[in-house]
Length: 335
Ligand code: GLN
Image (spheres, rainbow, N blue to C red):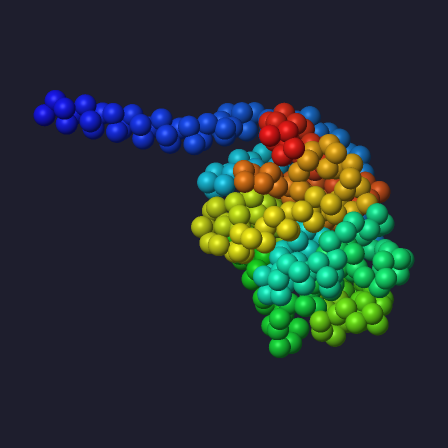
């Protein structure tokens, strides 16, 4: 009897030790909440930068919106500020459509057909296509993103759109909806992207009609997301493709390192090197004001604040993300 009790006690002790040691490297709730609050308070008054205005509907978005969300791979959510306010996802959508193309055609296809190298040029550069032998260089500049959209397998653009929006919704764990004014404003004014799609078509790189693909691409950029959505999407990448909130495996785990590698080299456009130097984190920005950063294997960080710097990256979102990553010692290269 006594022996049995000792045995049960020892087993329970071992279980507790094992469970807590497997979480030993994780941050406490208090640590995370404290640093999010500090980041919010430190930068909420910083009104540097300017909303994007080449898409007219973005110019009138409230520039004071500032939301910070942090999600771990167990699905715990930490938030501070305007975390329910939505902005259009814009270029951050490029990550998820490229991931869909990778699932459908394989990692080699993305590398060979679209490319995985930084352009060193602006996100909507045309000259970069010519300089790189008629290639987009990577799926996170407009050229590569329009190309990705064109390669999503579908019988027509309607089906392509349904697949792309369902895919992004699966990463976010909820049904993302369209920001109609942003879509209408951009679709009537996206001549430069149309030109990009035509050049790529001339080089034989498009999977469907170029103008149709540009329209679907513009629509995918117009889905609304909050900082919470972005953080859950990031945590899904951090969690080897499994959404930690819904527990759905959204993409095969073998592809997430490839996607994050391109985020590291080209996620913040021609400023990606500076960002990586400061944070070490794969990330993606959008001209709607969102930034999504991933701490592989650990966390997704989503921040929304519309005013942008000259590269098209949110000023406050970059500052807050850098602060959080530094204070919580999350730089992947420092582990
Ligand atoms: N829809 C925008 C465009 O094509 C996205 C650009 C961005 O977020 N950098 O210009």
